[in-house]
Image (cartoon, rainbow, N blue to C red; front, side, top):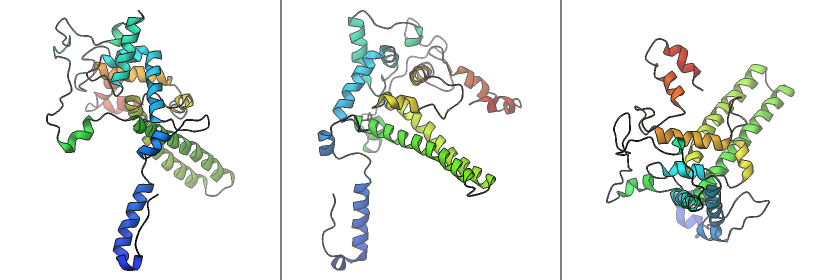
Length: 281
């Protein structure tokens, strides 16, 4: 734990304030320091894995879901877990169980170009040398950061559940009028649901598999009444990105399962867009 050395009278209020802020920043650090991470052990009651154990789990998951690994390999950069996905694909191919099919590859011609736009498959344009201020954009997410993302997502889900209970309590015990209670509930829930969608999208791309199996089931309970399982959503969304690299060229490299959304949105500047855009979930 950080300590504040010296006397407050000797250092003055300004120095003491700065040191207090530094100490607070250390305490609020989202990830465990390296020594603690290395010594962390997973138990049945803990919610955290150790980084090495989680990395091992990712490799096993990609071997289990080798269709997803094949889909990620078809993309330009292979995704956040490119090494694990590549190893899983090679293992499946070596055992004669490699996954094939149009849904798992890009739809290109003999010259490896789009059949519709004749554009070559885009490749990541990594600057050389790497400017220090841009390095974070090309850095893959670490196992610790993946676990942190799922922990935050779990916290948001818990807050959503507590908000529902709080709404019931406000109505049950008549803390406020129905209108005021509904406004408070609605405002908080809208904010939480927006964050839910943002982080859900991030974990799809950066932390596909949660540290715990039960976390697969907290992604959709507060979503639409008509929904799909977590793994189906992952496959659908990665298929979308493999087909549409440029939002101005939908389905450039194959069928895009999100095409129906684009169809409703592309009429935004037409008068009938007022009728189609609200249909987009």
